[in-house]
Image (cartoon, rainbow, N blue to C red):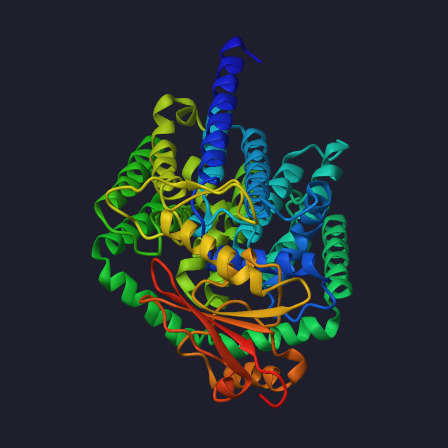
Length: 555
């Protein structure tokens, strides 16, 4: 390697380390007591008792199983669960670094040099929904990226090299994690395996070996899931999640997407431009493509986010701008073209699957699309890709993504002027700097709720902020800590109510949190007043928290 090449690698390493530091600082700020807390509650509940004795259902707990061993080790070394919320964010960052590092190795094997580092920065910068937690979305996205990157490295490695087997093993394990975290990703896995079995070009890395090892890895992973949860509980989780969430048919999701595009004319125009660039990019001069991509992404700063967050819009546009990569599936395509096409096509299939299976449809497109977007952004190696000008679209895209990842705090409403954050020193959320109203809420729980609860009692938290349960010693007695939506299907509401008709399932304490943002659905109605008596009504900065205790026999 030349001296100039070493200098560029050093610059890339410094930039990569700097971004890790920036995200590391970001994850110490803000607190989300809704969705992020929902994912953490599985782990907290298992630590307070065991997986087998937990009442929590829903399929999302399969993703929690992936990080459960790390949380067990943390709590054993720490002696408590203090600071576990921040530790989970550190695990997220570790996964992001691993997937980005694998992507850099793939791009370098593809033929890129400094652009490989910049492309890795883009992958590292993307935080799904701006929520830096090990959820089914983030673990699924990271594992998918890792699986495709290591697959590509295997394909680009000499057949006789021993490194190829290690790349195949890494890809197989990543696919196993991806399907456990996000079960519907088994579909793109099936697609890439079928491509391998029918491919006759010889570029696929030992297809029968790859398919066999990957199949074994996935089967072993799911065997562990079934052993941990039991087949019955896994089945009931699928049934219950389907009952309380009505994703609707394709028509509803299509109309949801169409209405978003109608409401965001500029973004719609940028989508059309991205598709055009994607279809003709193979005929364009690479410099023209790079300028076009930079202009399209920069245009997002003139529009409000359409698909939930600007970072999601960036990934969507870039994925559309890579449609020309599919021409690499032709029979006479070269090795780099073929591998790039398989990675892009599989990622696009994953994006469509995450759309079809998610309640919010197109919001989840970017979960599967990040590898497609990342490869469309840097393109295939060419003399032009080695010029400094080629870095422009990657830099613009990375800055656009970071405008969400570093400055958007999921679960927090933007405040002007900015309020001084309060550092939490103890409890599950120790180590975080949070908004004053969140700190006050947690202090109120500590002062008024914790004295009523202990490890021998059970509780239920109804309302927008299930994370309140993480500040209590009591274990939950609920089917799902996530609040039931106002439009919850009757089947799901009935299943939840039936759970509480069994006296053994009724918690000792029930907390109902209300604020102007959400009207909670109480699944214990119409028998709630018969079963529970009010003991406290606590005013909080944004609402109030009502506390009820279970009535004794004859009361």
